[in-house]
Length: 99
Image (cartoon, rainbow, N blue to C red; front, side, top):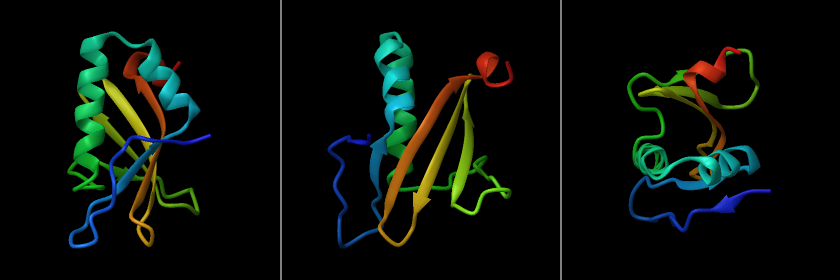
């Protein structure tokens, strides 16, 4: 299940809609206010720059999957360029990413 964050596509510019899947939603619900604020700021920046410096495409995937390390967190997300839609699949603290 995906939840829209209330960010709508602007037809005059390249603004991407952001959706959170259950894993990323669960992460944000369990996080403290500081972590929640930092991760939401990063997610909001993806609306205008879906592949920021440091984002890496996951080549093994047939989908447009990307990973982004920001601070102590790693984001896994899918981009649908045709529909200007980003789905955040997972947010993890780096210490948990490689467990």
